[in-house]
Image (cartoon, rainbow, N blue to C red; front, top):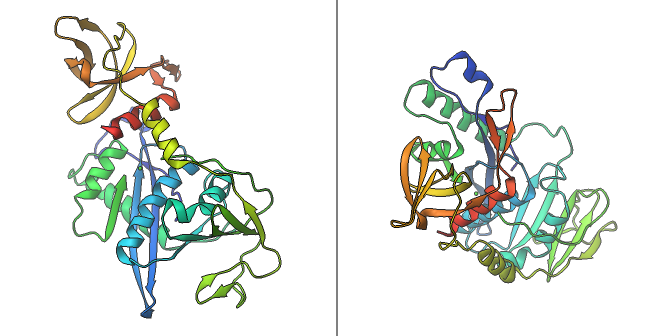
Amino acid sequence: MDFAENYTCGFAEEIQAAYFDKNAVTLHPVAIHTKDKEDEVKVKHKSQEVVSDELSHTSSRVFAIMKHVVKEVKAVLQNVEMVHYMTDSATSQYRNNRFFSIVAHHDSIFPGIKAFWLYFKAGHGKGPRDGVVATAKRSADMAVKRHSAIIQSADDFFQWGKTQENSALKYIFNSRIFVGKQVKGTIHAVISLGEGSIAVMNTSCFCDKCFVDGQPVPACDGWTVHQMSETNYEQQATELMECNKINTDELYQVNTYVAVIYESRWYVEQVLEYDKDDQEYTCNINFMIWIPSSNVLCSLAEPIKQGKTRNMFKFSGRDLVKVRNLFDIL
């Protein structure tokens, strides 16, 4: 699996100025290969395209993708004991202290399943995942050109993908950050040992000593064992829920920015007026409309003006993550 180049949204027909103002969509292709112990010759394949509106390719996004991957693997292979991950070596995405902690606690995050992580070197060439994302992008472009779809956001891309019944691709939309002990050095292989421990090595090893009954074991010289910090995942989840509770009693001032729900989607809008009797806010969502106070998720910090004309606005990434968390809870 790997992050692909972002998909650039476009129209079937557009004015010249639209070239300079296009939305992007994060695509993360995943190719899953499984083999059953009873039939070690036959390898089953599944292709997935993870779609996201989070343009920062971070480890938190990868962890969210891992949860979908393990779920799909268990659906195909119910008695799975270990997942072998193969990615490139980007330190901002896959090879960092967060993921060493995740590998160390893999059997507790995903009960009974350990992890073996292999990192490709730079310039590792093409693989199955590249074919997955190429198929998704080409199909989306053709749908837009045929006027059979309008794709201007990650949600549009995902909704279009779900309608592709004849495609072998499965489209998935979505994060949580776990920070552990820092492991220094150049790492190209990580094995979960259970109980919060990992073994790391600066090269990948496939010798007879390091593979017993098809399972990787850190038997060669060069493996280093690290005990990662303990992480209370249930407590983190509880704290996240407490932090992201919706305060329906809060009154939002006129001209402040808020996140609201309208027709099962969330929007960032500016408060124009508040009706105390009906407890509704006037917001402008393509047209003037009243939003009940119960549909207001939270307030947002004032955005930063960008662009030469200063007509574009950028909201805090932390605020947008909070909005998404609140919306997901609902």
